[in-house]
Amino acid sequence: MKKLTIITTASLLLALTGCSTEPLGLDLVPEFQAVESTPAPLPEPTFDPADLDQNGSVSNFELQVQAAHAVRSVTLVDGTVVDVDPDVPLADNVKASVVMAIAPAFSVLLTFDRPDGSSRAIFAAVDAQAASLGRELVVVAPAKSAQGVNGAAVRAYVIIASGKDQGLTLSDESQATQIAFAENYASARNCDVIVLP
Image (cartoon, rainbow, N blue to C red):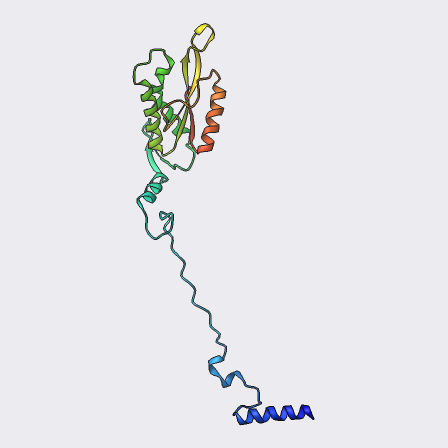
């Protein structure tokens, strides 16, 4: 009896308030009907590869970075023009051209008669080649040294790097030791090793 009273009371309240006990269909309330549509795709964002911080403008610094990594045409000593990508190790023909270009400056290392300014000329020659190629260089070159027994001159090897104003190590009689050091130095800095004969 309690159950019947509760149901009857509920029905009476619904009837008095104008509500129906019939289940409502979605078709009676059109604003709640499911709408089948696909959303419009979002536009792909455009990125300027030169805008490194993606702030919408390219700064002078970003232009300098882009220029430093741009492929450049370089004229080799023999007159051949090649494209050099600063982010890729130098090709053998480019390395050979560097050797020919810097050898005259390094020739003073094979004598004890070294005029004033010869060291600056060596560093300037290496720096000029590095700048034109867009790649740092590490040069292993022979030099005459007085390290031998009784002060006798011996052939030793020095390491000169672009962007430096002194040798990277003391001279050493072992070319292999100096090349290994230069290759280790170069691999940590993404630069090229040039070996003068």
